[in-house]
Length: 373
Ligand SMILES: [Fe+2]
Ligand SMILES: [Fe+2]
Image 1: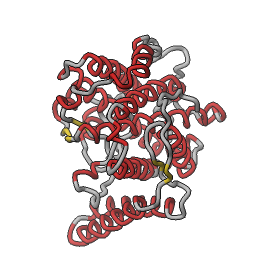
Image 2: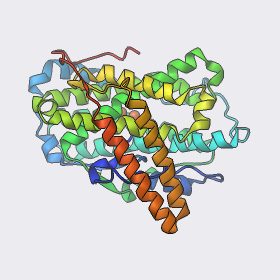
Image 3: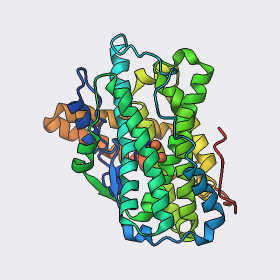
């Protein structure tokens, strides 16, 4: 998991809050505090009805399931998440302070999101007795633990570590029904792939912008996320009800929520994107395009991200999010009014995005895809 799902399902659509941005003098305690935050834009930990998930039968999709599991069992990234001679020295002290702050914030948020996947998958493996399901979740938990650990290694060089054991015990868990876990996690894996590969390809073309060695690891890394997404696509395929009828409205909801959250959150890191040499609007659209193309494998709709209402309402939402943060910082009656106004504007922008007519597609009989970007 790389991208967090907003907690809009908790009825919190109207309370966009600011992301916990890492401050100067960041310590491990503060980093863990940032990771502990549960706002609309920070990564959450999830729990679900594990018995219901354990009851899934993959027999109807066995011919696509077994090769995927075999590929994951072969463990193509076994030796990948280790620093080697490609890991150049990082001059943390010489880094522009604004960039350093945003980059550390990015690493903490990514580490928490990766670890969130690990915690959920591990718990499913622990509680289940269905061999197919427990095997899959164990393999995915293995990958996410490596991902989170690798980011924590990078943070440690800056003298910071997120206390993952503490998070497991103390961070709040949000309950999602299994079908919402599928929609959210499928998207989060696929958008995670799209984000990492877009940055990787961009830096391949513009190595002068690679200000930290971790980006060199993104290509193989995102292939793990791609495979996790494939697994969730197959899980959804095992129950056709999940991707038809009224559930298509839920799919649209999750697509809108995940895309708009990513847009708002990325715009909170201008120095980070500038250092990468990436225009944040371009990056967002590029990632949405790739994710939409991939998600046609299982979702019968994609969002119309070229619609005239799309970009203006993303911008409105982003502005509302900034105003919300400012109102919170202000406090008092003025702050309260500011919060109400920003919340209403964010909710209205969300509705405007959600009601853009979606593109409809036929879903292919063969679901499996290869990472081809
Ligand atoms: Fe991951
Ligand atoms: Fe993943």
